[in-house]
Image 1 (tube, helix red, strand yellow):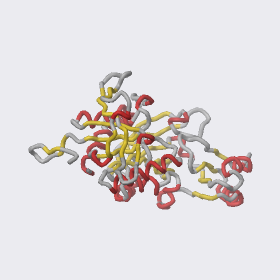
Image 2 (image 1 turned 90 degrees about the horizontal axis):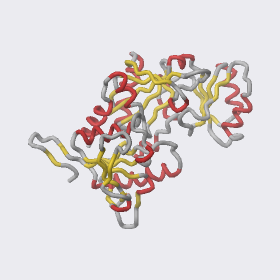
Image 3 (image 1 turned 90 degrees about the vertical axis):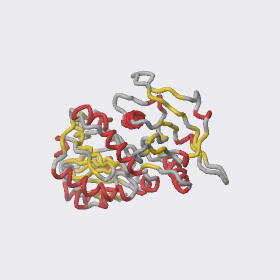
Image 4 (image 1 turned 180 degrees about the vertical axis):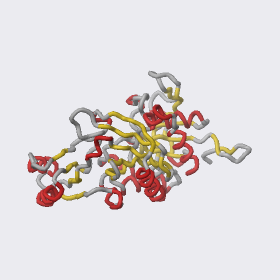
Length: 330
């Protein structure tokens, strides 16, 4: 049994495992995983953590991980204390937790891929994993938008240089980006004059070896690249518009963008309410839908952020909404 029930039949005291980056690397003033943990602890649940490298699957056995049972201290520097001085002090079967929350940051590389397979095996053994491992593999964050043509601008996915040049000739002002980029890395804008288009294509597609996404430039980026969070199939009522600074065309916070929280527009809400139930049905409890103007540009599912920025500016407790959805899902 993963949890207890109180006299009202409400589950209490779940043990939640976070598979995440090293706790010592967290910047808790902005980290989303941190506020998830804090809200869970506030409600009486217990929290444990491990890294993907701590998971193990041996022949004839269940998937286990070396975990640390942690308590949040409320202090800004030494923000947690651990019952174990080293994760190897306590191996634990993943199926023994009330829920396993996968919060490892991108990139989605081969090790991330293998981690999803271990997590999926743990699911077969009875673990409840969020987001669902298969869904993480099936939703590459840039490619996933192509499933919803009614919500995206002109977009091309190809390796072919001639295809890209034809797209540029048709649309004039374009954005090129690698499918595996994150945080705004590797994004180029080419205007009507086509300056350096050939060189940029060579850089991104590695002479036809790598696939590139090309999109018509959306001038609404000046108003921000909006992160619309969808939790439990429903949109959070506020988004975070990440506004490019200086001469940048990238709004990503990691690229220096300024985050401004604002209520969802009617179009933002339509997007969230349409995509939400679809994503939830696939096991995506939390997704971050990126919207420029009226167009979806990415669907982030690996480790969506912006909980703290929205709460700090609007007072809407996104972490509470997430934990509500997590409790309901398990």
